[in-house]
Length: 416
Ligand SMILES: *Cc1c(COP(=O)(O)O)cnc(C)c1O
Image (cartoon, rainbow, N blue to C red; front, side):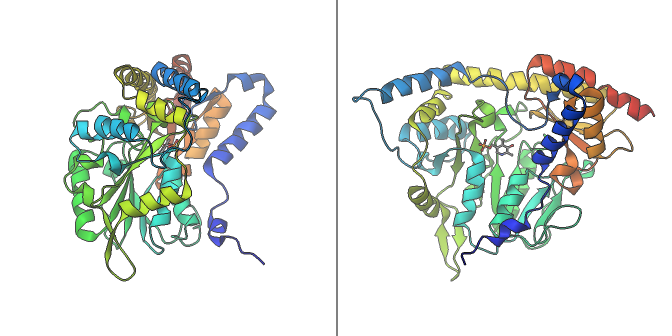
């Protein structure tokens, strides 16, 4: 009999977003009269249309595909040179990062890359993830066999959890036990907090002396407004020897449905083989792409390049400014209620404490029942997320303003 990948069976059943969807569906069925009032600030999906520059580039690219003279077939698997150059120059070298065009690998998004990258790493790496965490890092490592079983109360055996709490300002301490791979995300999903230059320098230096690989997820870098915060880990000296960076066009350009992202692997990043010699990850990733993918479609690659044009930059800036203004509205509303709140300044997420005495699922249920606002309970991102909810700023202005008003239902609970 053929075998399945038993690691999939270790995944804990109650995945966060399906559970949220189940509760919202149950509420809607029981309360059809107010179902139309529901405002979703749960899943981090964008709401606003694509930047004009991306639309025009895609239209033009489709027209090219319609003509024999300009038709294009298979693209290079890691992206057309002009797209990789626009990215390397616009996002990295412009910020002083020493990254060559061919160290940028264009893809159909960051979530697929975060999972595929495990194919070029060996079995048995000890993986460190933050708590709370973007669930993809945990689940992909479970599927790849890098964990033990799911633990009672959340988490998995075998991972090293790095708590991010109010006490440490939501910035994880360096691991003190043996680890091989560390997942970091800044600006963070779910907490909306950022890692500053000094902190990232400590991580890079520790990674180099201990042989860790840092998997740096910078999906939200376009929301950074504080000039002192690094946008890329390669702004830190030495990161070329210890870090992979993941970027996505989903949040900066509203590409959640268009699908594009990229991964940076410097050629100087070496890993150990089973016989103890060293090999460059760059070559392995190149081979993996050439073998397993035929790349990203022509219209999408043109849309990506268009985001780096002058108009494209102005439009993505306006788009991220728009969501940041929503985030500020929501964070102000939480603060006015006396709830300890972080995020929102360099991030589209607001991470706010639950009213005293309520768990994160209780707060979620209360907001759904009394305000018809869907949030994400912090406990869904890990044990240390208990006592918080995440509110997403990806919404229309009218909805963000309405949510800010409706959040006052939390005041009555705090007062009780
Ligand atoms: C949204 C998000 C991404 C982007 O994933 P895509 O597959 O590119 O849409 C990556 N990392 C984090 C933490 C995210 O929240």
